[in-house]
Length: 109
Image 1: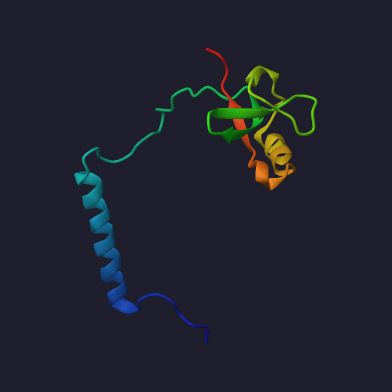
Image 2: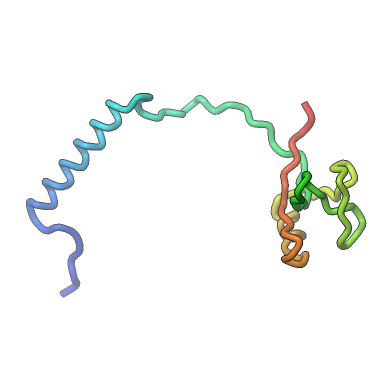
C-alpha cells in the first residue's frame, strides 16, 4: 500500500476551510485590496541592445567593440549584442576577476 500524505479525514477538511477563509479575509482587508492587473499593463520600453559592462568605483566600463578584453568608458564605443543571452555568454567567457555582466541598453527617448 502506497503511503498517504496530508492530514487524514475531517481534520484535513477543517484546515482547508480555515485556510481559505483566512485567504479571503486577507484579500478583502488589505490596504490596497486584491491585486488585479488584467488589462492594466503599461508599455515598458524594451532594450534596443545589450552591452557587457563591469563596475568600477566611479562608474561603469563597457567591453570595447572589436577587442577581446579592452574596456571603454564611452557606452557608444561599446560592443552591442542583440540578446541578453549573447551578452551574458560573452561576459562569462571573460576572466572572473573582471566581474563582467550583461547590461540592457534603453532606447533614447
